[in-house]
Image 1 (cartoon, one colour):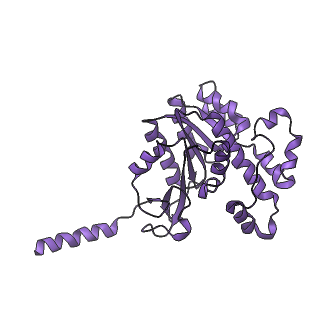
Image 2 (cartoon, one colour):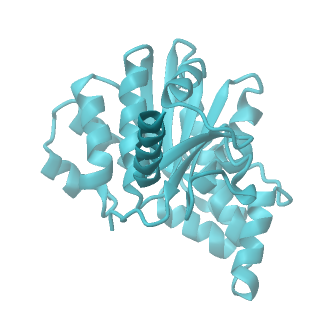
Image 3 (cartoon, one colour):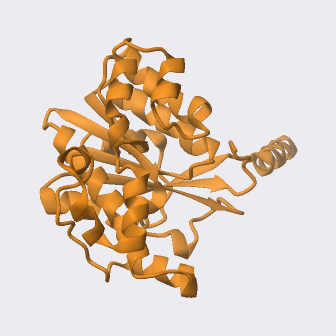
Amino acid sequence: MKQLIFLCLISLALSAKEKPAYVLFNAKGQRVSYQKLIREVIKSDVALIGEMHDNPISHWLELSITKDCGLQRGLVLGAEMFEQDNQQALTNYLQGKITAKGLDSAARLWKNYKTDYAPLVNYAKENQIPFIASNVPRKFASQVAKGGFESLNALNDLEKSWIAPLPIAYDSELPGYQKMLKMMGEHTSPNMPKAQALKDATMAHFIFQNWSADKLFVHYNGSYHSEYHEGISWYLKRLKPDLKIITIATVTQKSLSELLPENLLKADFIICVDEDMTSTY
C-alpha cells in the first residue's frame, strides 16, 4: 500500500511539472486531440487556418496540419501573405523558373517569410501543389480605407483582376466589422472595416476560384479574418452555401487548463497557446 501511495505521489508530481505549449479545444471548449482535428479537416472542402502572425506554434501547426492532410487528400494551398499581383512570381518559384532570391526580389514578401511561410511554399514546390496568392494588393485596401469601395471603380481591367468582382458585397452590421470600429474609436472611419471586407472578399474569391471538389483547399490567414465564421467564411458561403468550411483559430492564455469564455465559439477548433510563448518577430 505504501508503495502504491508513493507511486501515485510521484505520478502527481510529474504531472504538475508538465507544461504543454498548446492545447486544442473545439468550439464549445472541450479538449480534442490533434488526430480528431485532422479527421475533421480532411472531410472539409476548405480549411481556414487562423494564425497569430508572430506565433511559432501557429506556424508549426500550419505546416503539420498541411503535411498530414496531404497524406490523405489532394491539396491546394493559399495565403493572405501573398497578394494577387504577385501570383506569377510565386508560380514561377514553384515551377523552378526563379530561385528563392528571385522570389524575394519579385514579390512583396512578409518580413517573417523565411522562418514562417517559406516552409509551406517549399512543401508545395516539392510536392507540385498549387499555391494561391489570395490577398488584395495592399495599395487597394489602403485606397478603400480612405475613399470607400467607390474608389475601386477607377481601376483598370488588369487591376480589377486582382480583387473580388465589383461591386463588393458588404454587411456593416457583422460583429467583426463592428468590433473594429469600436476598437479604433474616434481614430477610425466607416471605411476602415470596408478595407478589411475587401481583403476578406478577395481572399474568398480566389479560394473559390481555385477550389475543386476533389481537393482540399488549405488557407492561411490572420485569425481575425475567419473567426466566428465571419470574414472569409461569410464571403465563401455567399459564393457556395453548401461549401464545407472548417475554421481554426489561434488564441493565447495564461492557463491552458480550460478555454476562457471570450474564446469560445471563435472557430470549429481553437489552438490555445501559452501566452509566454516567444514570438518570431
